[in-house]
Length: 482
Ligand SMILES: Cc1cc2nc3c(=O)[nH]c(=O)nc-3n(C[C@H](O)[C@H](O)[C@H](O)COP(=O)(O)OP(=O)(O)OC[C@H]3O[C@@H](n4cnc5c(N)ncnc54)[C@H](O)[C@@H]3O)c2cc1C
Image (cartoon, protein in one colour):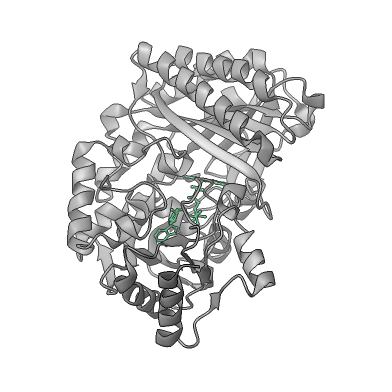
């Protein structure tokens, strides 16, 4: 441990004598905390100290105490640790601020206040008895921070917009150590900047999200075969481009491969489908639920509560697996989406024997109705105008077992992504937006927001963090000044 890091830890102990600080000497607790990231790429890093604040005041005291060490000491901000981007929420030889002890969910009139250490599953359990819903992650195990500061797609996004666009107030500790509220009336430039700006502007200690009346939904999974995929692409494009497109649907269409299935022989296709009203077999989903032939015994479509639907999506208990995401955005074009799947299948051949391989080519649409919500809800910095829409996020998601396969699996993903991108670009179907939550290190998600939005973020950074603490001392994720 460097002298400066040791001094910073000692200063923290002096400022906060009862602080929950965990160093490698407390081997069992340290290992258990550091090994609880979803991705092994995060757990591969060893911070010198993990700090678990119990209140926003402790977060503020941390920021003030660290100020004199900026330039010598680095820190990371961690919520549930579900984002696989290496080093986004952990830091080698630095201080990791683990927000998971910040607890509290408080239902107010029209919104819910959620402390930064909560999980979406707990939020849904609180809201459901009141007949309320919120735009949150589709998995119970995801944290609030990554989704609400970097975009965020929910089951309800087609109707309600991005998760970040539903945050009515961020309670945030900025570089001065002040605790600010950022909303439509107070610090509104910070409010807009935090809707996409990630960890560049401060440590958010509480998120207040708009709630709405919500009952159960018709939701589940349909498994089928690759020959039907082109027709499914046609159905997807038809739905997304229809002037009567339903605002109640959320569609995720994938080609998937898992070594454990079919003795690793072939790919399968998976539709994850949501209709956010309690309607059995709604016509809007029929083209996707009735695809034939399908694995009828694996069809899970039924009326479900939000908690049930989000539990079906969870990767509960998964940690320290080799896991990465990459993504590119394209227009809703049948040929682009179909060829993208073919390219992915071709490239997959080179890694099919990697131990424990499980991966997918997954399409997540941003319908026009979703994009229209941004300006209605006060704006964000993502740079996606409704005139860009509908947009389809092409997510490459890969899980594998052994570190020794890292290089070739990353190579497979990068090659497939590049070819998909080139194919879309050649046909004029590429959208220059990269979704931060699914981006890998070589993809500068921030710059994909466009110059004007990067400038807006830089101005907010200069105002709320004039010495650039969150740029130099908090290196995780994508940064504003290069
Ligand atoms: C099973 C699963 C399901 C998913 N489902 C969805 C989904 O439905 N929709 C979707 O859009 N994405 C989804 N994702 C991707 C998800 O959006 C990202 O992984 C997200 O970043 C996870 O958030 P987290 O708070 O757990 O992340 P962490 O890994 O803890 O943090 C991610 C980033 O956010 C920053 N951060 C976190 N909290 C704060 C804070 N309070 N203040 C400042 N910065 C903060 C961290 O510094 C880090 O850079 C899913 C991922 C998984 C594994």
